[in-house]
Amino acid sequence: MHFPVAIIGAGPSGSLLAHILHLRGIECIVLEAKSRSYVEGRIRAGVLEQGTVDLLVRAGVGERLLAERMVHNGIIAGYKGEQHFMDFEDLADGKTISVYGQSEITKDLLAQLEADKQNVLYEAEVTGVEDINGEKVRVLYMHEGKQLELTADYVAGCDGYHGASRKAMPEDVLQVHEMIYPFGWLGIMADARPSKEVALFSHHKNGFALASMRSPSVVRLYLQCALDEDLDEWPDDRIWDELDLRLGANPTWKLTRGPVTQKDVTPLRSFFAEPMQHGRLFLAGDAAHIVPPTGAKGLNSAVADISVLSAALIDFYKKGDETLLKQYSDVALRRNWQTQRFSWSNTTMFHVFPGSTSFQLRMQEAQVHQMVTYRSAGKVYAENHVGLPIEYGPDI
Picture (cartoon, rainbow, N blue to C red):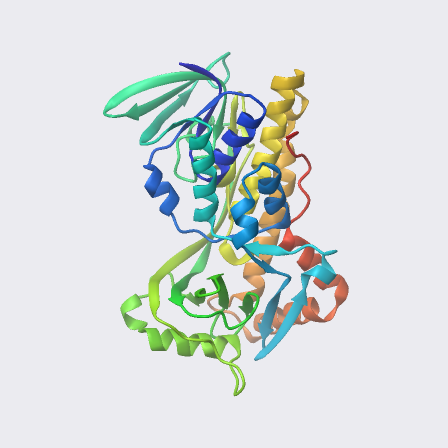
């Protein structure tokens, strides 16, 4: 089998790329290692930048998103027991962020691919991507116990950090940059009403804390913890008490508590690889970059990649113009460097690092103070939080 474009991975980035290409009549195939139910069931954060929402709506897959999302016009930054609202609508020229589960986006996209009778092959694990510098790329995969092969003009690697696509990049070409943070997040999901209308990020001497939500009746809350934290030592009441302490509970305000339905520890890392293309292979999303969740940029960065890559492929197949296709990595990395910087900066500002001195803690407080006090600093933060501009978008 030969296809113009082969897409590895049916998560949000791969399925969005397939859908956009279909809108312009460009045939592709999606190879996904897991089952559809597994892909749709993966729980991930769902904080969407303005640009992510706009692209999904333009692509015709945003109807349920617009109907069910929770629109947030800012965040609350906490430190020294105080809480400061940052008005993104004011600071970022009317832009907002939306809360809508990543699993719901995946469901919407995969349902659209099915309705359009797109080529999506589940439980098809890619084992190799070869001849990326040739006229046709060879994609080797296992399906129903058989080793199979297809070819494509171009391959989009949207298969995550552990996928096969990045491994196909020559070692003497690929450069990797990584930081492993010396702490994790103890996270809980609970059936409770959100205590604030927007997310609350808090710096505390005991460590970072975050109160966010998934819906009007489900909250997601986090505590900075050790990487090897023993969950057995954290009964629900202890978690709620520590959250109240770090988030700045007072006689007039405390978290609304409810049954805890999920509890886990998540490590934090910053990672990106460059270039994001070589020959006829292109990387997008987690295959090329991972950010700590403090800035909620993972999904949004992937969508930004797809915006540029889909525009480049449409330019080539519909106009015969390879200009953007050849520039994809440079364009995508320009934004990703800044996204990495924001996520790293947000993480280092709010978290307490092991061995921190009193001077370092005071400097972190000074950073938060500057952000919530001076409009120029708050504006830069807000513009990064709602999402930096995406240089290119598909003609759809």
